Length: 307
Image (cartoon, rainbow, N blue to C red; front, top):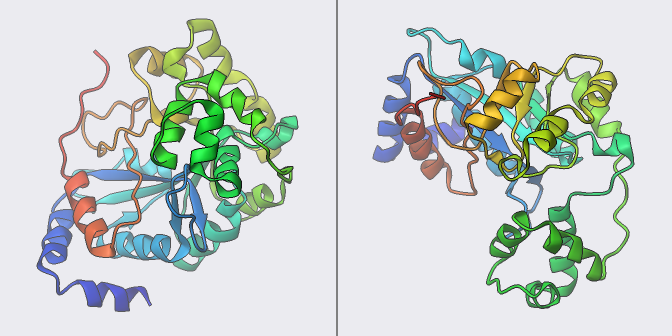
């Protein structure tokens, strides 16, 4: 199926040029990040979501033009190696196992899942899951009015809530059904498939907005519990909301992680700071656009690390 797709799109000049530019990016890597995978995504969800079919096409294209490697290996490529790609997922979602895992297994490629482990602590769903549910039930206008926020799209509303814990707490004023708690069955499926597990903090705070003590605490609270459940040491970290600077990178280094990942969209290459590694989240663009943007991102300048 994937080879049929590759042959179908390869006649587009932009795709051919993209494949050539990717092939020429030897020694470079690109880390991709996904959140929700759905059979049929909601229209304009607050949570970044793509369909199973789109995800499968993207995985197939990456396998065709480069090597999909375990996440730690994307940092260690030689100058003469083929372009390397690593696939990651953020947050605690059952869809990781239900929809993403079968695609990964069909293509025989690894991925790393950055988890909070909220179900281990009896915590409910993330605030943006509640927001998506509220919008689906009551409509965007009604939810925005209840929260006292002007927003034309779910994405705009989510951006306002991201920077305000008060607004996040006000979601409790919106009528919501009881969302079923997460079990650990999906988590065990990831472990059984030998997928990588990283840490993403329990409460998902914006680390750039908290004090030093709160930062250090967020990096450790719940880490040991998730490591025990996974039966392995957690050496990789993904910054909540993808935001980090030198202060946060230094703290993650002190906490004993071996690498940490942002959402800066930067490629990986010589000079990449292991504690400020960029990741790119593809959207629902066509495969032609995905191929072209992959080439552009892979060949973008390497951002300098900490001074």
